[in-house]
Image 1 (cartoon, rainbow, N blue to C red):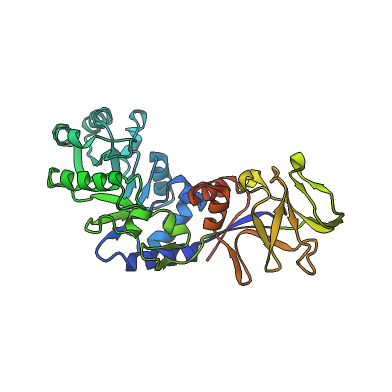
Image 2 (image 1 turned 90 degrees about the vertical axis):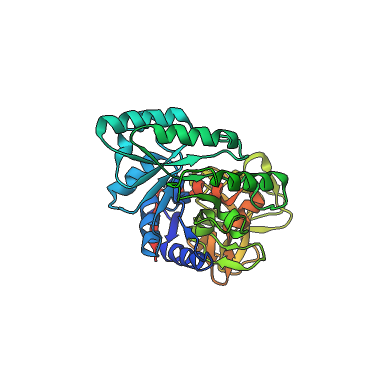
Length: 366
């Protein structure tokens, strides 16, 4: 069997959620499991989080919500994109909350609701400064009135998203929070499911009085609050393989495409059958490392499609078939998703999604 595999630690995911909820007070955390639960498996992660105490889940697309229903999940699901016009019929699945970013979507849903004698429950999408989907603050009163007047629709919440949640003093952050507070006072009484904060905003307590928050990345990886206090501690994904070759090369040997690395000393070089085809970013060429026998083995040269060269010169006994961990823990050492993101100059979300999407062998463990 091919040795490269992704391990999903569902027990870590459950415990992270419980740790986060303990710090949330009266705020109900609604886990975000969009994009295949950030590469961890949509239905598996959703079921695990519900078993840990989550009362509802959030996804991005309608087909993600329908996949949960097909898997037997009956808990309420927030669909943060809403239903596109051609999806309106399918959106009649029970207990969905559909985002509504514009009146065209509301009208399309109303037509289906009237024809099918049904009711859609909506969350008003508000663009307070992100520049993405949603009504601008000044449009909200008229939009809420127009939607409330359409038959078959019920507004039950409103939400927005912060563009720079890690900086509470940034003028855009201040303006967004102020806009949202003002808007809340204008919403009809039926709007009780109001939410603004995703992981960073919630950890930094940008609007702690809201009844709901949408944690995402902090469910899947270690996270700390604004004071540096660790809130969730466990990584929920491991990427590992086994060495398929170990050989000695003389000083002056060049390694991988474009001769990116020239050996400065006689070296013992190991080959791992893993690369960007497995979601491991090419930006980590000549920069990242893997754990072999509990020690860091630096990456040599360019990350290839399906192979990576490692320097195991300083790892006594490194041999064919040794485990190589590119994300996760081995012994008392760990490579976290934050380590990889910092080296690659990106966000953890991108790497987790890439690894999860590429995984041909995904194993679920407690």
